[in-house]
Image (cartoon, rainbow, N blue to C red; front, side, top):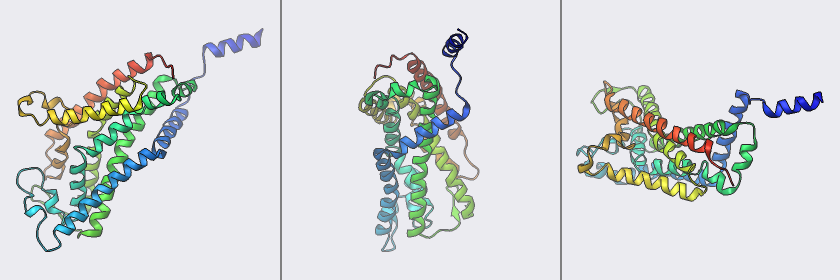
Length: 299
């Protein structure tokens, strides 16, 4: 009888998983994500973009001319492309500026949209919930994995741009947007800071994708919906008549990372961007938790 009572007590009060178990769950989720062929293909495409940009700039400037006919400073944005031939480190900034509006957020949208819905669609979500993690810990592991992937994807672009720039163009002291010249070491630190800012700029859409993933059991539907939101937000952000809502759209401050390349640094839009991304994380992260913890898992 005593043994039966002890078993009943353990069933009613199951042991709580240790923090090390939660860390192992995150490591398992991240490893599984990075081992998928789809993920590797997406990262490969991101790594290829800086190479294509670098080769294009090298070919166009092989006769001694400037890239784009010298149109780098026409007010269309930071003149990163026009500076690549002078210093290869600008290929890092140009690549991030080129991939941030479309390629990076779409890759993040695909990964985030598939986090929960992909498991549900393949029938493995129920088996994950059998583990002693609980739904909250599992969702937190999925969320952390998605955030880590934001950083990994950004670093892939930055590293590819740095290596390609070093191979095709000279490196040296860097003249910032404000006209101040800094050492290459300081510029490299600023490039790392820019990559971190770009990664943080993606956490908003990543959290939205995670929330959408809790609403459906179709990974394809979740990914398509998240990608559609990225495109829609980008379009809305270009319509002048909708200027009132622009500051609340997650991509509005994405290119503010250029302000880190000024001396002194312009913090205004950088802070607004981080605050906006934090707001999206708080709102849609809470919505994802509320939905996932109450969801009836049938697959």
